[in-house]
Image (cartoon, rainbow, N blue to C red; front, side, top):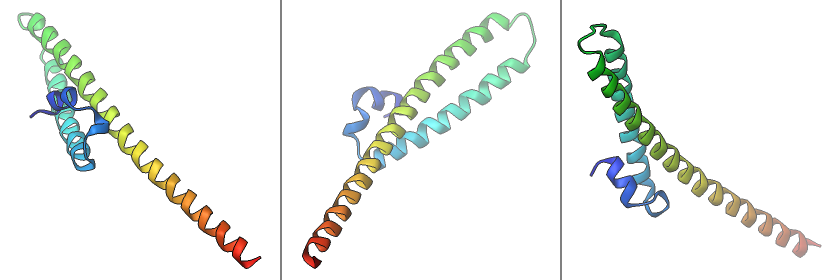
Length: 105
């Protein structure tokens, strides 16, 4: 399943970390290929192909934006997960040190 299709069927918060990391890698690879294609299209300067190239550039730009959106959603979900884990860990550490302070007093 492509990352674009996967992203529309399953929201980031419902995927595992591994699925998110794989999606990020696929999106990065696909965006890189499309950007390189955009550069190739821009380098060709024949009038006969200009309309076709303009349509391809527009289509590629839309796909790049969709991939970038999926990338942002996946990375935001990973940041959210791991910031929650570190906050919970900090809360446990504070609770544990508070308990030790109370016991020592």
